[in-house]
Image (cartoon, rainbow, N blue to C red; front, side, top):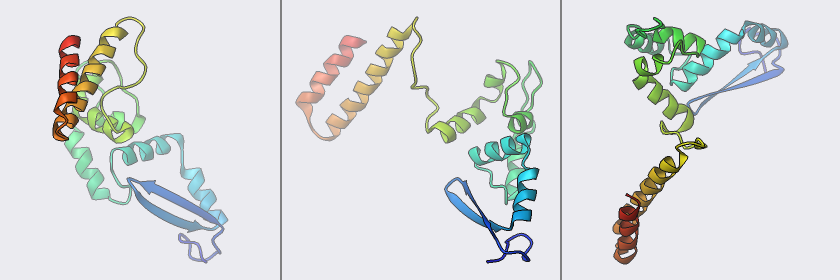
Amino acid sequence: MLCDKCKKNPASVIIHQNINGHVAQYNLCEECAAATASNMTFENMIKTFMNSVMGISPSSDTQEQESDSSHAAIACARCGLTYEGFKSSGKLGCSDCYNAFRNQLINLFKNVHGSAVHTGKLPLRGGAQLTKVREVERLRDRLKKLVGDEEFEEAAKVRDKIKELT
């Protein structure tokens, strides 16, 4: 099998790239693989990762340009960081950036974590209130399921438990 890049040398390195479930395979010779690896600076790796997380395919320049133009005007009023600056560095400039880029960050968190709601560890202070809120949310979900399954006796017990907690 010949190298996909130079089409001259036999391919000895296989690179798999998975972006949003689309898997691409590249068969490269040693020289082309080395050249590809040397072009992957830390900044390029961050940009590639951020683009893949945000759903921007590196092979689609038009999609990336459209995405860039829709976010180019967004900037943090406090530190002046633009959304494009955040995308290239992967770092926010200040605490106000979270509000300035709120909609974009929510989508980013959903892509990375599957949810925009934190479900990890709770703080030592104030954790009891958060635990209670999570329990009520869990019970409400269970109540909906029970009503849908027409298990009304159990649903009444869950309803009473929700009233007790709230």
